[in-house]
Image 1 (tube, one colour):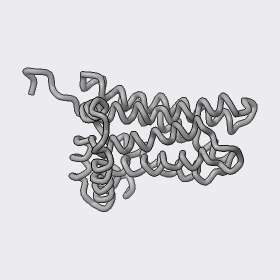
Image 2: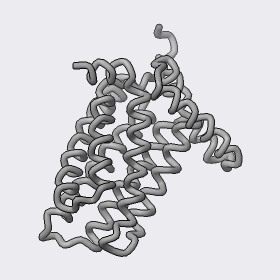
Image 3: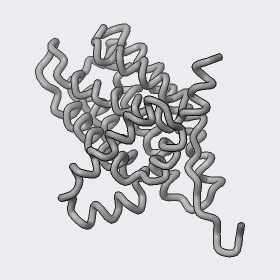
Length: 220
């Protein structure tokens, strides 16, 4: 299938761009016209913007993969990376150090907060008897778990553990996509519907990615 072939050869650029678009949709979802602005959802969504800015600016290994993929998506992501680097010139030294050393870990830990915001909003304002609320609880939970797996993969030392986590993360985030479908079907929110499509593509691309760990001393 042409799409799968493209995802296999362009996984990092596809995943990066789809995740940016999908997470920006959650900002719109926080301003859902059917209710007042949800502060938990908005706070979580704003964390995603910071997370993607850090990942673009300091994710050197990912940028190397993206540059090697070439093509339109690669060009777009690399231009966004240059803008992110200019934007983060004034970042505090402590956060910059963590971001440079563990850009995936720091960024995906922040992305998990988007799920926490959705979960908090559903628990605080939702009706547990409705499908929409249950779908949002599931969505928030799976986002937290999936992003936590990607974050942990950057912090663990062994390649085997990192591979296991990066294999589990897309599976969990695929479950989040299923929950998004239920939420989209019950709310008919255009932002949620858009996020379903782009995150579905991102999850497929995630199966073709790998976080490479440095070899222990003495191994080649």
